[in-house]
Amino acid sequence: MNDYSDRRQSTRYDVTTEVGLTSSAGRTTVLTRDLSKGGLCVMLPAPLTRNELVQIELSLLLGPNAQSEPLVLSARVAWCAQETQDQFQVGVCFADLTEDHETHLETFLEFLRQGFEVGAGDQPE
Image (cartoon, rainbow, N blue to C red):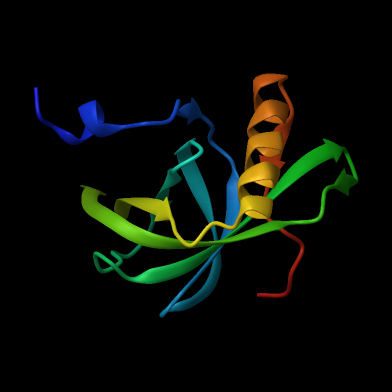
């Protein structure tokens, strides 16, 4: 097969959680479908344009009132598909990751493997 799923190079984690997303339309909190070392899939009420640059904010939920500092990553929209009349599934690939970003992202994914939850950063909308 030669479809997109065969080209994945990173393990995907089925994670439905909130993350911050900043695009040309502004900043919002969105739900993820999955997350990997290479990118993530989010659900949006409106489409994004392929190759658009966005910013993603990931935070670990450490308890009822505690979360980690957000990991802020640049990403590029890889694809967008209409899921329902008012829901779009958008896949983004992390872009321009520094070695520090990669280390933090791997730590983040390790926490997911151990059962921690993730959520959106507490930044103003």
